[in-house]
Length: 134
Image 1 (cartoon, one colour):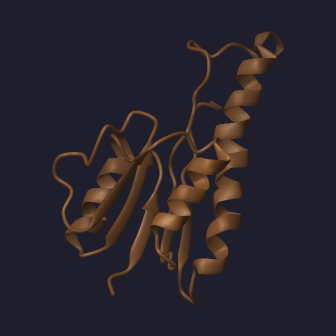
Image 2 (cartoon, one colour):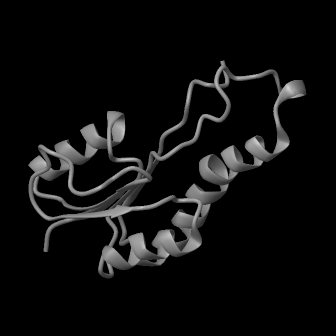
Image 3 (cartoon, rainbow, N blue to C red):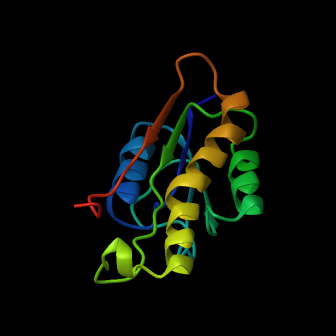
């Protein structure tokens, strides 16, 4: 059985590039994004594409279930930037900040907690962060 990777935020950018590279190497992929109408062009191999938001607990469960019992790599790449341009924290709308934290901090940890029981020795977790703090 090929290695299985869950890659969040795989509709474009780094997430899509990672998924393409893993697919070319024969990995089985479970990918997601909020705006993922289907499997993106250029992805090779076995790909399960699930549209949804990692902040949604049922979506996270669906990602892990789609891995069918084994996760060799979890890439937490999905993120939310929040208001643009980014306001100072003193001016940041708290509801927007809570949403950003749910997507960027709580959801990745929750997904790790779900995936860990399915991760064999040698499996890896890659958490991608943003330069927005600059």
